[in-house]
Amino acid sequence: MGFLLFLSEAAVPLIIFYIIGFGVLSKRPVFDDFLNGAKDGMKTVVGIMPTLIGLMTAVGVLRASGFLDFLSQLLIKPASYLSLPAPVVPVVLIRMISNSAATGLVLDIFKKFGTDSYIGMLTSVLMSCTETLFYCLSVYFGTVKIKKTRYSMAGALTATAAGVAASVILSHYLS
Image (cartoon, rainbow, N blue to C red; front, side, top):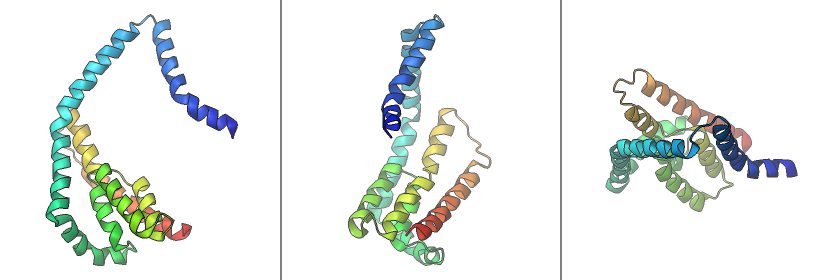
């Protein structure tokens, strides 16, 4: 156990020293390469900033307008057939857009039901089994200026459905 703790604490510094050492041994201008990478990173941030602002605004509008609650109420009946409790439905919807907003909803569930409850466990597993698909698709495709995503959205929605199903099954067997 002591070795695993040491390894987990030393992994990041070791990787950084390895990269710097490799650059020095390869006779690369390590600091200049770092600065060029930082410049490219800033260009990427500036390029995806409108997408990020749009997504965060959309989440804020959905929550403030009550549309998220309305949509959740519409989906409670179909979700119950899938053994998905009503308080988890908004988490599933928001998780596809924003991780931070979904984390806020998860914390609300933890306060209300507890972390050790079935709903708390399901929510935790759900957050691990799903991805912020709209965020990822818009940021990654937007960064490289891909307009036609072909089957990406269908694949991402299928993976999300599989993640939700896996969350329900795993939580049912673990509780």
